[in-house]
Each structure stands twice: as C-alpha cells, then as structure tokens.
Image 1 (cartoon, rainbow, N blue to C red):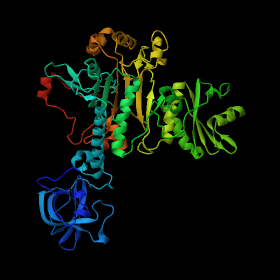
Image 2: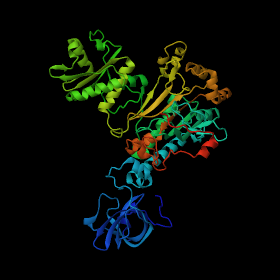
Image 3: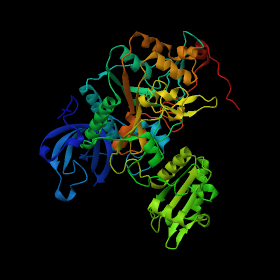
Image 4: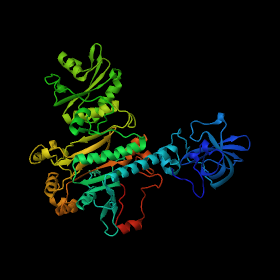
Length: 579
Ligand code: ASP
C-alpha cells in the first residue's frame, strides 16, 4: 500500500473506512458538493484523486464548490439510515473541527458531475477542471497502468528503451509531415517524426538487438475519433528474429496491458491472412465480434443473364431479420455504396413467398435457390449483394457490414487478431509505379520474390502484419529488408530513383553497408489500446491534453501566429490565405 500521507495531510478522502472510526485525520481536497443541514450545519463532500468523503461542517457559509480545503476532524460512523452504499466511504463521515481554505475558486465553467453533457471545446478550454472528473481521473490511471505494464513486459523480454530525436528529416510513413523551420539554416526545415522507424532500424545496425520506446509520433492527417495529430506508440524492433518472434513479443505486451487493467489475461491471439480477412470481412482490420460475413456468390451467377451480375465477382451479406428495413433506408444504403465506389447495391428481402426485390424477376429459379442456399437465408432476412471487381465488391460489403452490424468498439470483450501476409503494394499510381502498403523497408514474402521481376506486382505478399482489436487497427510491423541491393530494387520499383533514395534515406542505405543484421519490428497505438481498455470510444478521453477534431487546442489556443521578428529570423514570409 502506498503511503499518501504528507506534511499537509494524514489520509486521502476516498480511503476512509469504518476501520478508521475514532481517528483524527487531516484531509486536503476540493469541495465537490455541499448540502445545508439546518441553519449552521452543512454536509460538504470533499474530493481528491482517491474519491470523496462527507464532512460535517459547522458554519460552512463561505465554502463553495471547488474551493480547496484542508480539514482536520474525527472519523465517525454514519447513522445506519444515512449510510451511502454507492460510495466507497459511504459508511463514515468526518466531523470537521478545523477548516482552512487553501484556495478560493470561481464557480466552475461546467458542472463536474458525470450526468451533464458538456460541450467539448468548453471541456478542453478548462481541461484542468475537466480532469478532476472521476471519469478522467480513472482514464489517466488506466493509461498509466497500460504504460507501465507495456514497459514491464518489454523489459522482461530483454528490450531496452532508447529515445530517438524529435527534430528529424522526413520519415517514410506516408502521412504529411509537421515541419519546424530552422533558424540556423533559413529555408530548411526539420520534420517531426511520424515514427522512429529509421532510427530503430539504425539501432539494429548499432547492435541494440532489442529496442523499444513509448514514442510520440506526429502525423498531419485529418483527425477522427481514433486519430490525433500526435499520438503515442509502443515502438519496438529486434534483431535475429522472424515474424513469429515479433508476434510473440507484442502479444505478451498487449496481454500484460489488458491484464493490468481488467485483471484477466487474454488468451492466445489468433491469426488470419490478409486475403482471408478481405474475403470474409471485406476489411484488413476485421471486426470479428460479429458475423454477417461476406458470402462468395460468383459461382451461383456464373451463367446469369442478369447484366448487373455479369461481373468478375459477386458477393453478398445476410442481415438476419433485416427484411423489415424500409425502402428509404435501402435507398440510402444504395446511395452510400455508390459514394464508396460501387456501381450499385442489390437488395432482396426474404419473404414466405420468395425473394422480394426489384431484380428478382431477372434471376432464374435455380439462381434464386442457389443464392438462398449459399447465404443460408431464412424468411425475414435481408440480402445485400454487390457485383464488381473483386477488390471493390469486398471493400463495399465490408463497409456495409460495419454500417449495419457493428457494436460500439468497447462492447463484447477484447478480440485481438493478427492479420498477416499483407500485400507488399497497395495499388499502382498513375505512372504505373506500385504504392507500398506498409513502408518501403518491408521485406517481400519469400515465396513471392520472383514476382518482383515482371510478375503481377499487386500479387506480391510481404512479411508485414497488423494487430487488430475489436475492428480497430492497433498497429503494424514487418520484417525489414536488411540488404542494400534488395532495398535498392524496391526503391526502383517504387519509382524512387537512386538520387532521391540517397537524399531521403541515404543514411539508412549507407548504414546497411556496414553490417546490418536481419531485423523486424512493430508499433502499436497506446492511445487506442488504452481507450478500448478504459471503455472509451474516443481516444481524446484517454489523453490528458488532446486537440479538438479540427486540430486546435482550446486550452493554449495553439496554433497561433508568430510575430514578424520571429518570422524574419526564420527567413519566412506568410502568404495571405488562398482564395
Ligand atoms: N513504423 C511503423 C508505423 O509507425 C511500425 C513498424 O513498422 O514498426 O506504423
């Protein structure tokens, strides 16, 4: 047990119990609530990080909400009929003998109870008040526990924490860099690291064979519920390892974090190939907490006369009991699919009289029967079909599946999943150059290396893997290319010429001349993991000082303009905003 007594207090408010009855205690904290009790007496709930306890105070007129007090009094048992079971300290109260106001307070800008919905900008502007709420106190504690468990787990496995710089050259994660102008070299800029990727690989060349860091990463991307400009990653890299070793290291770390918060150690984390995830869930971060899997129907309609189904691929999902979906909603879903890139959406209601759908008349009896069998359709279900290129059909149905069936991310327990064998390239750009699916240092899958020379580039698998939790991508990693000639070959495929490669990553390529060990690594988002473990759907709730959705910080008002003298020193001129 931690000793929380200090020169100013003997105990914490939330720790007092019946066993303390009769003791004289000194407490410090904020006035949570006060209730009058007769003319002179008031009940004052005093709050600190540990919780609240009820004080009985004589002549309490000038004690207002959020005043900071130091109170000495005697702990006594509450009369049975006034005990409060909902409160950990509910069986006792403190009969206050001395009350000292350590700081007066203006009325808080919003009520601190958990019932009132408060505008987020207001909360963030007064984050110091917001942080006093039990929910945020608890979330910060969960976060600290996750950090500590992850550190412990990595260190148990022989990883050492190495810090890498914040002012760096551009990093290759594919997002937009935040940049910092150089005063010493006007016109030149540092980038803030999107990840410590290059430095951790250099650590491997430097003989640090198990590196980790809880690293701050910065990416200038649009913000969402699960994304902030700056975020924390558990970043790790190890030498003389295979993919299996890395998966084991990271599995151990996330299991330790989950156990530290929930008390239960999750079981072994299953694996699924990227191809299977796309086929069954239409997503590379499949939410396996619910069914509604994508059903392959291409064969059912192989000889169809129905034009819309004469496509390379037809797939569908079954919405159990969805037949009562309104026409408006179906039109809305169709519109949405079109916006996502589909040519259209075919819907069918399964009724006792057969399939109710605008397209049913174009399908033969065999096709209708084959469809029902393949989809295990029952009366009352809704069937949704997309026919298109395989990529598109999977993508659209994957999104529809989430739209129609996805529970909140915090529900249904913790479902971790490793997705392995990602493709090396995501697509081809306009110039026909492949775009890396991970980053350009990812090792191709051994069995697919031959395809790099004139084969189907989009079919090349990589040794890259993702960790998914309840449909959220927690993180990614890969076995790296450690040989210079392979790295150069990949750069050239990516359309990065020798000069560009040298300019951007020359220091990595150079390092590889001096004996680079085979190595592999991973990074996962601490904010995302913490949010799910804390039962929060938005990572802002587990970050002490987050930015709003638009990237602003209402607390410090960042970002702000800088004065002309400063600009001049940096050799910068600000243009008027573009029309
Ligand atoms: N640097 C990668 C990322 O931030 C993770 C890794 O490959 O280790 O996603």
